Image (tube, rainbow, N blue to C red):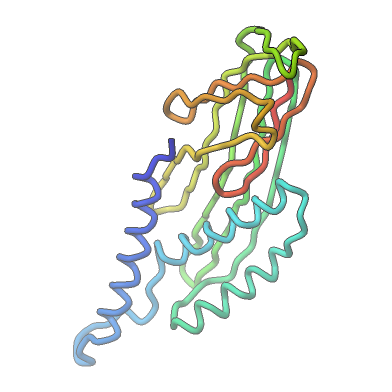
Length: 211
């Protein structure tokens, strides 16, 4: 199931950065002060909008990433948080072969500050490998199924950390697709031979497996 340690780590980083900002705001003026904190908090926010964008793109829904960036700048200014200049590039690649297939949605950012650049990346990756055939009866009809080993992961990378989580997934056609979790992001899925089945993870990122 979902690797909660990865989620907890991201949350802890955001809490740590927020606490640090609060403490700095009340430091004595005679002491050295950090006027612009740059680090985990900004990177975590960028990763959050990355996952939202990838979710929309995976389902062919329109979402203007520049609008998301504008909203993110406004939000950071309201909190007094300094966010550098954002530039990005997005790639997606899917190969739905019959026996083996994989796909990758990746959004990579460069955050430019006066004295440094931060590279931040969010990636959704899956692959499947054919195992065997089996038969299943549905409404009195015997159907031949393809059985696959399926692997799914999210990767969050920035200068401060790298986190990999394994999200929960489900099939859109739940009554037709057989699905069973194994461990460490690995699933066993059975789908009618010759069909292409759509899956969603718990963050509404869509991907497909071909039988």
